[in-house]
Length: 354
Image (cartoon, rainbow, N blue to C red; front, side, top):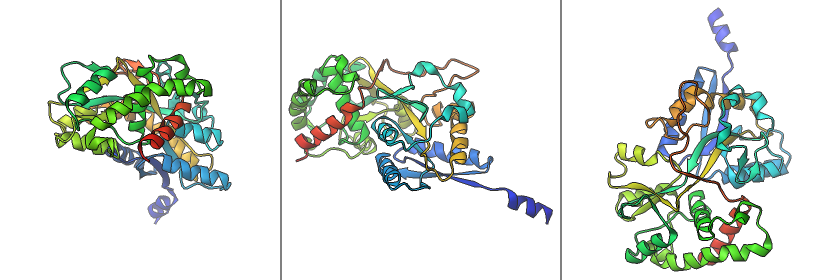
């Protein structure tokens, strides 16, 4: 009887974690995290979303309606999604003071700014992403210029593509081309000014006007996601896919999802590099449980498991006590300012999806 009474007093906290569900490695890692957190009386519920913008739209509606309790306890985000929630004052602040393991974070990774916007302790980094291509038959080089990529498309029509913006891999491909075609103009790292927008965007649209007719299905259709494009690469339909995870190719080849002939390639000399983050809505139903989950995910054990090739393969954001594991696989290129994202996506849709 006494044992039953004690057990009844133990309260299992549910934490609803909204996170992208499009990766087997991510999903498997979160299942491992669920098992570990169960020992801390936390039931982590992975709410799988196709794009975190769906959750951001929900939170903005809840915030506008002044709801006191949100359906979201924790979310995985960065870039324009963070910017929107920060601007709406919809996130819990002062996270570092409430998360002990934030003291382990590596300040050299530049996570204090997210797409040019100060994080201001409204989100904490969880991992590092670096944008690159997974390719078949694009020569023996480890990088190509936009012109060389266009030349390949011209010689091999129908063999290349990219995910349809505003899917974030597809938008990042546009950002990468924008930077390269403008020789990394300093204005791209600042909020867009009306006087410069047309000038800086013109080379991108001119390039895509040439590229699109040479793409898969004549540029009239695009893969819906990075996962779909990787399937097309595996099936031999395409010669390229896209990735933000420098370990994804190793994992895919180990699991025989991609053949050994596929390699990683940069467009330009550096990879767009950013941190991805964890944030807690101001109206979270279980903020204390969410803080406990964030603290666990930033622990040495969780970050080690995450960066392991058989765990997820996503780079760590903490400094380990036992080694100095490098956080970047490719030379790093900062993101353009978040303000360019909406411009790129709106104008791309207007030009190519009418």
